[in-house]
Image (cartoon, rainbow, N blue to C red; front, side):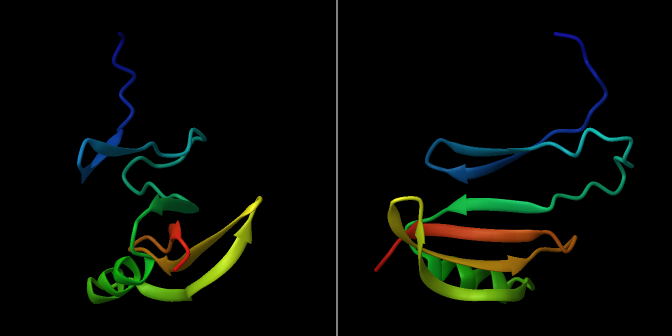
Length: 93
């Protein structure tokens, strides 16, 4: 496999789960990569939200239950360090 020179971020989520983050493919600056929206699955949306805020994330939408597709889920949103929107999604209570 050829090395393209692109930076790819692998985030170890534990229990054999890895999130791969790849910067936009436009002629953007790799030194300042940005993502618009990242969604992470969790079993405990409220705890993920609280922990993100404790680490410095800014609140966007507090945990709530919504209909997504044909199911009901609990989810919330915070702003990450690059102002990206991070969503935590999990089963409703």
